[in-house]
Amino acid sequence: RDSGTETDPVDGENVTVVYGAAELVVGPDDETGIVVVEDAAFAAVDGRVVAVGSTEDVLTEYPLEDADTSIDATGKTVLPGFVDPHTHALFAGDRSDEFVAKLRGATYEEILAEGGGILRTVDAVREASDDELVSNLTDHLDAMLAHGTTTVEVKTGYGLDTETELRMLDAIAAAGDEHPLDVIPTFMGAHAVPRGMDTEAYVDDVISDQLPAVAEQGIAEFCDVFCERGVFDADQSRRILEAGREYGLTPKIHADEFAAIGGADVAAAVGAVSADHLLHTDDSGRETLVDAGVTPVMLPGTAFGLGAEYADARAFLDAGYEVALATDFNPNCFARSMGFVATLASVGMRMTPHEAIRGITSAAANALGRPDGTGTLTPGSLADAVVLDVPTATHLSYRFDTNPVSTVLKSGVVVHE
Ligand code: NIG
Ligand code: FE
Image (cartoon, rainbow, N blue to C red; front, side, top):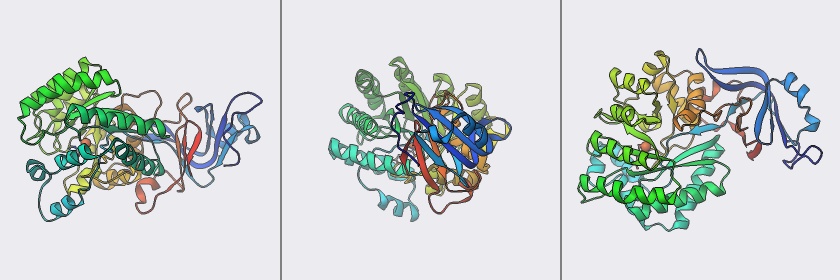
């Protein structure tokens, strides 16, 4: 960076130029996955992209001497800021002992059915102070930003009662207000059934008690449900998501992670913006999702961590549909790096590095209902960008040792270097 980010006193505009990139990813392309420009640059004015193309063309229009901020990306690769559309990043406590138990043969579903898993994190979150919750989430947002994420969705679902669910939403909003990352809140009261409670009674609590309070509080944008064998069945999931929609919350769904119990049909019926996991989705489930315009979100970190089979990303891609990717960061999947997710998507699901980049940028923005240029570097979009210290975009999946991120910009401002 050659200069500060203060507003230019002459024309009142704040100009950012990133130039000399060996490769720059502009946005999605249906043939190749993404549009890549070589020896490239982009310029932004007041936080929005105004020009993108060859370094020569961009610098002719926006000379370096007029830029408030300029970044020399020679030999590096510039991508749109990563969008992580599925996380449970707000939690407390430590479940590393369950990781060891799973290595010894225990399954995720067994641990949850015995009152562990999500329910142990619920205990820890109920006991944590508001400050602790905000500080825990902020630490994770810092790590995500350092790995190139500029927009992240964060779910509740470790409260499972009205008071704690609202407290989680307050903490998500508070951490988001103070952090350069865009933080998008999702209400997920239907994440598990509290110990000793009847599932129907809990569904009733989510619909009649939690949802009205969440709507009144006005923080959450989405409503999500864990539609799964032994958790919420298809009918219960549909009722919760429909009720959420009545309160203005856009539906999302955890579907077909351990068993296909009708989550894809629910997603289509309620008009979900995304269906996530999809490890056990078959051809007809896939057809149902794409016909209804639901964005499939794959979470290869979860499959990796559980030693499970990966979702069938190729079935969507080969039929011409895009696949979004997310970390699913949670105590059962301790992954905050979208670059690592890109590697897992390539190695585990045979997604090309370019398809994976689309998955963590523009496709991920679609999974968050933001087809407004988020996850792209096209004129008009927010100048959220990542400069990677690698020679081509392909290296993001290819390398899986150290963090390749050298600079992160949010709305044209350097927020990490
Ligand atoms: O998406 N599957 C449900 N929810 C999370 C796991 C949350 C947890 O285990 O704490 C997921 O993988
Ligand atoms: Fe999840």
